[in-house]
Length: 187
Length: 433
Image (cartoon, rainbow over all chains, first blue to last red; front, top):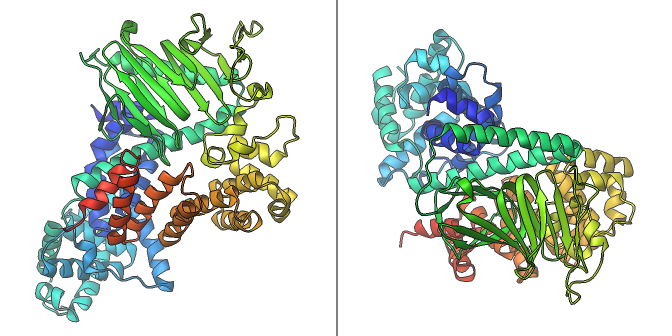
């Protein structure tokens, strides 16, 4: 079904359209949330929250041709907002990731440990830098794409990536799992 | 440095993958779509009560027109064998019991007919054949849009002793077995309601009309905004009708029995007398205007209500606070019920709602504790299956997978066809053994 037709039917309250919409974008939203949050225990809640936002906000979309981009932007903004809340919560009550969080993702203990360390390092970054780092390095999107998805200029994305790189390198200097990748240095 | 990070990113991307496994995606899809259906019905319900019935009917007619337009734009494709699937795409068979949990549950038939079971409601698919579908609404509310072309399929809904035969229509049916009361609303087309199979005539209810009846000596058609509104039809029921004969039940408002489990789970035993003066906050809460209800209750004084009102009203106030998003307030009110009405069914019901509240707040350990309290205090309670299932979910979410597996096993032994069986199986599937 054409995306514009899908959008029109969704706005008309067609229940088939909500299922079709979900099926169309489930993969994209899951991929973004999964990679941004890192096999998080609240992944499903986050995806559900995003789809409710999408269903409810569809009628406010002005340009239905941008439906796919709008979906990605809503997903990223929702995760960004969640990261911000978590940062505040962590200030009062620190939460540490466990390698077991990645048990369903990787069978090798070394890989689980690596994933845990990477996402722990990302958790310590400001949300803007966290999002930029994941989209650029893990999801392998171009600077221009990251800039579009996060509604900022490429110069801003570059600045965020520079800061994120420095923070990850610093974390790697004290971490065996990461050291092999970033040379343990702060070049 | 940049290249090293690219390599690190690629390794992370390769191992982390693109999302959870298919089973989790399937559950996720089911939850998201039912949550959306529930949110949509919650949003539209209070408004519908505020707007005059005429405007409501116009809106429904418009929705039906859109549905017809959309349906009309699709190629007519009716499969030879009628089948039924739920929102998760799982095929449902004749003889199967289906219960909607916290969220509404949608069923879709291959003749493009649809049915939505409200949260907390349950039904049995008695028969699904090429020429007939027979659904028994055990408790709660369902709405249906029957689209069988040229009435090729005869649809019948059973609600207690009432048979609702569909003659091509959109309708909803409420059945409260405790009160022995049925409410049928027809949005499009016509239905015939019979009092049992032996009632040859029955009552025809057309679009825009509403039929209410109880298992009392007689049932009365209560039209809404039909040209025939002053022609209320009446059929005498058999003299040996076995229900408590309170004619006032027939006139009871729907608001007194919302689809929410506030009534479903215990308050039904202490039905409000319709002649009783209802405080504004109670009326607002029953209408689903929770924030307004809470504001009105504050004018009276929340402590005052919690200290003096009946258990039913204090539970209702707790619901209003919960649905208005005032979780701390809701918790305090429900704790008052636990203290003031200790060792009563109301206190047990408060335990269940405290569990739901804790779950909503992602305080999963508390949720587990309260659901366990409910099961301990009401081992045969109406919501014991839900409490059991929700406990599995809370344990999974709090990362207690081993405990979740233990509870899942006991759930499947006790409720093999329960509405949480997929979740229980999912929990067991994680068992490394």
